[in-house]
Image 1 (cartoon, one colour):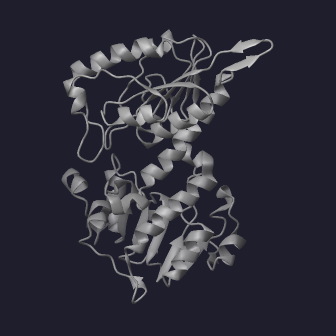
Image 2 (cartoon, rainbow, N blue to C red):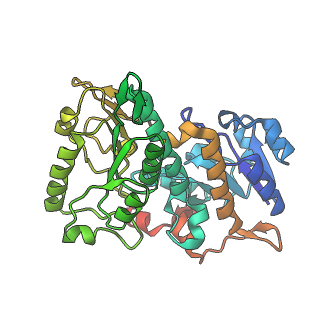
Image 3 (tube, one colour):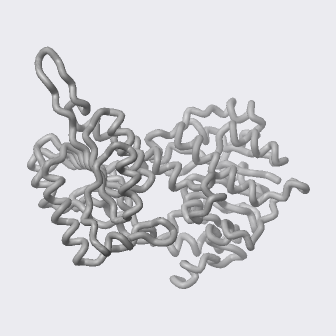
Length: 379
């Protein structure tokens, strides 16, 4: 069995799909691992580190994937990047399938079995494979660090001989993995933290981290969570009530970290232009949902917007990649745990269990066609 790790082709992507740690683990499964030269440089991993772990260093991507049974990527490859791949090879990556049906069709035409790691089901045995959680955790941490950098003031309360410095007030919108880590990080930095989410189960989580929960807690709020643990889209009436509460709260905040996403849909706009206008000069908004349209009406992908009233809106893309070494280490472990279930241990060969619920949930293409029911309908 051969596993290939090509370098990422997006110049903004600093992560890599394998580390020396996981190369050793793959070798333990009986696999040969080929890593494209330079694949780990942006994550502070040298070719020599991979070689010492037992990998073969390939001079280019084509050499790496030639004859590979499994191809590991961070981002979805395009069809041209899979040229020369073995038909039936498993291609595992963050596929970003929603809104990219043509790209999926092109991948399907290459004959590979493509798996989208972000489609991992929310079940106990898949937790170790959950790339959304591992990467969102880092994004939530980095969002607060980026906010502190742009804020221009101290975060904690400081009592000095020259007087007292008030603690910053930080509001987290969306209490998933990223939001919870943002709360924890902001608390460690000494901010006064509040948070909101439409899912009632998050209230206890927020309070357990020492933050205050802010939400309209009516009957609709009590039923605002899917069986999979995601937020439901709320009614227009609820959204108006929540918007009024949020508007009055945001006007008093120094920093807002917005993380709200609904799988397969554009990010909900939670922070209107009027809300931004109500904030004090020097305030900061970090929009982690900017890649899906943004939670803030004024955010721009990849930019820091400075408004006329002195508010900064941070819209960095691919925030987890800003912590490339740590993000790669966690992502590579997620991939190893997933590939582990695709391997016949006795024969040390790829043997995909097509009826496994994890495989069925993540499989996007197979035998030249779209395989996931969500995208078969769209086709």
